[in-house]
Image (cartoon, rainbow, N blue to C red; front, side):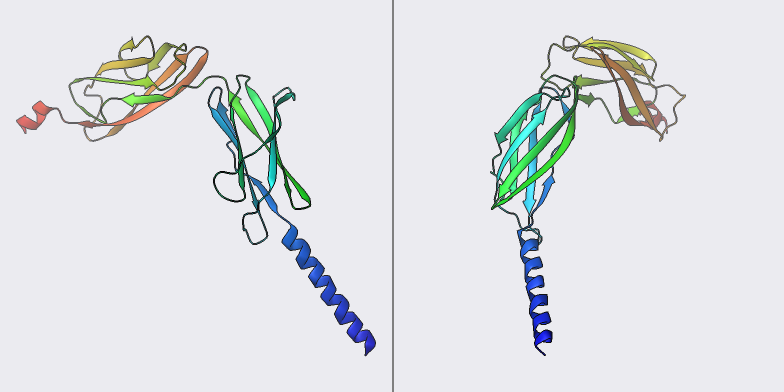
Length: 224
């Protein structure tokens, strides 16, 4: 009988011990970006949650390694300004292209937690905003193009080639380009087509695509 009570007590102590350990354990999750352009704002974000997914308070630091494994950031304090359990470190993305490793180290209570990931930095950033109509008229000259959306004013468009035959002009000190072309009868009314341009800016080449629909010309509508 005594042996039976002893076994029950030991089992209860075991369960209590397991529960205590589970409650103390925190999950550490990185939720940061994995792709950056040089010169933009970067951020390391780490979340700490318990087994019930409740956020937990902690003291966290961030470290970032250059692609050559030297330190870009070393053991800098992370701040908590959004929600309990979420910590971040802000930085300006450096110029060196490549894969950066980063790590967040947190201390909650008597335990230390560490999580790491990586992000990639590209040297050139070009964001182009399309300028032109979504619908074009058969039998008319149409102007379509893209305007560069970037603060890097020293980077210029060197060349652009498009899948529609026409004249390309460069404006705004080569920060935008426009294609003027004739919508001929080789395109079918009511169909959707694409304008695709291959753009070289400095030594980076990208493809830009815009879809448009062909409508009847105003003259054709009147004749009908």
